[in-house]
Length: 331
View 1 (cartoon, rainbow, N blue to C red):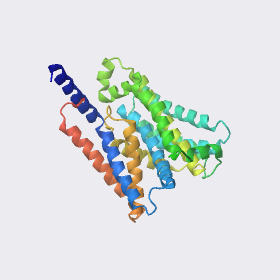
View 2: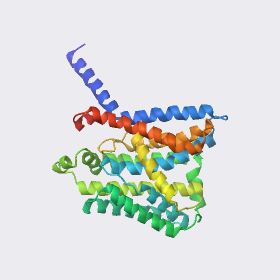
View 3: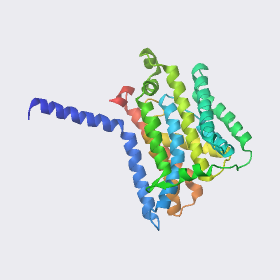
View 4: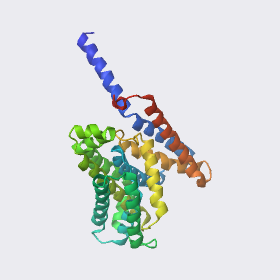
């Protein structure tokens, strides 16, 4: 073997090693979900029928979209506690405005909500967790004003498209793939997307490198609002109604953070992927399904979800404790 071939082989192995290290969180989340869902299908008396897969996909997609929304601010080192309330607001808007403008109205309002979050965080120089906790309460107030009681009307053509399967592939899966390819990947490869990772790694270093910090942070919260709204529209299609429930918004906000952590994204910022958050969300949703097939009281679901989340957070913390230089995370 020539020296050049040996060098190229070593470089190839190093490249694969770096790739595996970078994708470790996603791969672990995929493995956990695959094991849990296979167990769920094995315990099902009728197996994994198209109806069961479609139902599981719809439930998982709702949390997956909100988790993707949470991921982007987390990459910058922030945390958006308003994603659940924007999710609820979008649901209430879609159930109130049933003509052709309901889609653009819900998405437009969510973008405004995300922009407000970003502007206050950046130019108000306040902690994101405090800002979004306050704005989330405001957004829920608007949702409650729109739908003081559950109900409303639904665009049935839209609902039918969003809940059916095409060639045995659930529409919710197609929606998630569309979001990944049309929103996440272009954002990840953009200047501001790379800037979000740089800000999360070291905001001071990012500033010294010329990263447009203000624009990158504002865009992160704008996209968080947009993705939360898409989840709200899907919820409207599934439930055929709108409901301003504070518990629902809080539940999705908390679970989105759990899905982000399980998916391998660091809460310290600068490391992770929205794709990992998708599988993290499906892991959390599969916990409830497993409780049912194993005939365990569903009331205990928060206990088991909390255990899974605690293990995920602990593993992530152990990784950080083992390193002396945060740059080691990217080597």
